[in-house]
Length: 158
Image (cartoon, rainbow, N blue to C red; front, side, top):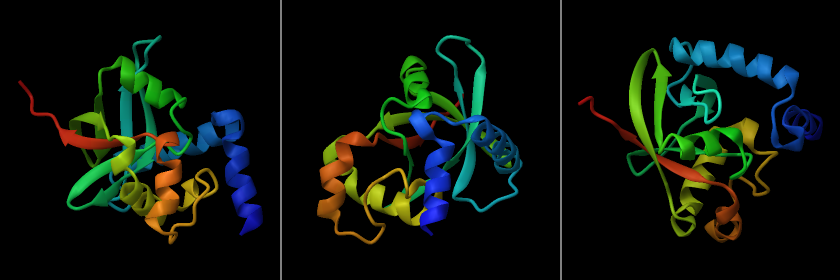
C-alpha cells in the first residue's frame, strides 16, 4: 500500500496534478460525467478565474446526514478552490445529467465528520490528508482548517 500511496502523492506533487494525473483526470471526468461510475463520483465544472472557460475535473462526493459535500484534498490553495471563490460558489455537477449547484464553504468547526466520511469514500485522497479514515473525530478536528469543505446546494434556474 505504501507504494500506491507514494504514487498518488507523486500525481499531485507540488499541490498540482502532473501530466499523467491531468490525463487520468480528463478520462475520469468524462466517464463520471456520462454516469459510468458509482453515484459518489461526479464531474465538477467551474469557470476559470483567468480564462473564463469551464474547467471540468473528477470529484468524490461525501454524504453526511443527507447532505452532499466536496472536499479539497490538496487544501485551500488548489486551483479549483480559487476558481470557485472567483465564481462566487457557482458550479455544475455532472453524473449522467447536469446539475447547477452552489458550493458553500463549511466552517472548520463543522468539518471533522465530513472529512472522515470523505476519506472513507475517496481512497485516492488518503495519502494527501494525514489522518486514518477510522481515526477519532478529534484527529480530524486538528487538521480541519487545512482542508476546505463545501456543502453542495442545488441551484434552481431562474
